[in-house]
Each structure stands twice: as C-alpha cells, then as structure tokens.
Length: 395
Image (cartoon, rainbow, N blue to C red; front, side, top):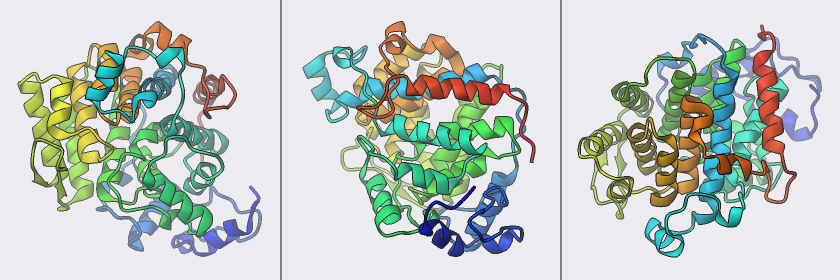
C-alpha cells in the first residue's frame, strides 16, 4: 500500500510503536500488516497513550467456534434499522416525542434516514473489507473523508484534531465517556471470525482513536464481547451471565475510576460504573420496570453511564421479543438512535430476520449519506457475506 499524503509519513514517524516492529520499511510502500494490532496496543499502553487499565485478558484471542455470516449480516443491518428509526426523533425528549407523534412504530413519513451511527459503522466495515482487519489509521482517514450527519461534539473535536491540527490517530481522541464509539463498534468482531485477529484489541484501538477514556473503551470492548458471544453460541442467552460478563469487563478496564450520575437522573450515585450498571439493571428487572420508568430513573442520554444500562436492560427484558424492545428504545430513551442501533445489532445477531418488522427493512433505502446512493448498506452486507464465506485469511 502506498502513502497518499505527507501526513501519512508524519504519523508513522511519530508513532510510539514503530520500534516494536523491526520489519517496517519506511518508504512509500509501507506494509500496514507488518505490526499486529496486539503489538500496536501493547506499545501504546507502554507509552501511556491508552487512557484505560491494561487488562491482561485483552490479549487472549477468542477462538471462533463457527462462522455464521447470516448472524453478522443481521447484526449490521440492525444498526442501520435502529438508527434510521430513531434519528428523526432524537432531538425530542421521550415525553415530547410521545405528545407530538404518539407511539412510533416505523419511519416518519416512510423516510428512513441514516445518521453517524450507520455511517461510521459501515466506514468500519469498508476498512475491514479493504484490509482484512481493523486498521485504526485508515479508520481515522475514512471518518475524516466525508460529511457526518448527526455527529456529537466528541467526533467533531476528533475531526478537528486529526484533520486540522494534524494529530496522529492515537493522539486525536478525547477523554469523554460518551457513546460515539460504542455505536459503531460492532464490525470489529468480523476479522476475528476470519483471520488471526482479536476483537478485544481491535475494540480498544477503534475506540481510543476518538474516545480515549476508560468507560468509553470498556463499553466498546464489553459490547463487542456481547455480540461475539451471541454470534459464537447456539446456547440459550443467560441474562445473569450477560450482565455479569459485561460489568466485569467494565470493572477491569476502568479500574478505580469513579463516575457520577447527572442532575436529571433520579438516582444519585458516585462510584465505579460497573457497580451502578449492574445494580440498576438488576433492580429494574426485579421490579419489572418499564423502559420509560427505567430511562427516567437513570437517564438515557449519550453519557455511557446512561446509555449502557438502557441497552442492557432493554436487551434482557425483551430478549425474546426484539421488535418490541426496539420500539420501546425508539420511543422512551433520549439518545434513541444510538440505543436503538445498538439493540438492533444485538437482537439482529441473536434473532436474525425476526428482529425486524417487514416494513423496517422494505423501506430502508440503504444509504450511508443523507443524499447518497441507495443500496450502499446492502452492497456492503453482500461483501461481508462474501468475505466471511471465502477461505480463511492466514498471516
């Protein structure tokens, strides 16, 4: 692969991990496969550039039991469906939404529009298809290559750092516990199904690029792990195991860092994120709270101390009724496109086609940009299917 700008060379010359890869050739024919992502992540931790705890289990590559491309396809389709269902109503509070539109069960006026959740997820898919793995500097480049609809302030600042200030990808991220990385993290499991890659490592790298913060990194890793567990198992999904595993990962990667609930949340808390998430979800399940009640109790904004509990609560509560779970998320959470897209991914991986109403798929034009070509999502899904169905990639 050849360099396509002077900044490519600048980024590589400033890279903290180049000494860990003796076989990198500093020319315009840089071999991007010379360093494994595990080597890259270890070096970044060594240099103090990862704002999270270095958990040793990150480096234990999970072995795929099987490759079911259909589960992956519906996981990715779920991102686009959930995003497009929620995006037009995101600016409203749940109460305002209900008053103005009643119960939302499909796209407004039959129009399904994508936002950053869909765009950045499928940008990640493109990088994986082109390189056979997650390449973080290519992710940064593709994110910076087009207009992003509905992006949050963290992504805006990342783009300024990377595009205008010329910071390398591993220094451009912000220390913010917001959900702009979790929403696009699902594709990182794909290379681990096909090649000698590790989705745990890839989730960290893909996150810190924009959100270099412990809870942001931990939430991405935990959500990718949840999706991996669904796709790699035919066993019944155990709610207790899902919650325990998710919060274990958050605990390991956030360490002793404390988080505080917002003023709008009814529950007041300051302490480890993992304890809050576990306790609130268990409490709500025991009390059989509605999604509306739970969202008001803990909040449902883009702050991960609110986003993550909502995703877990709705996923577990509606484990066998995915369409209702998605509808509840779209109507009764504030950041409904991101929570809806995350649930679309999880339910899609678990239940496949049954997760989505027929009109949700039929009316989805498959655009990646608001005024882009129709069918791009479906074209990339076909490419993913072909990628996973081909012979394994060996290093």
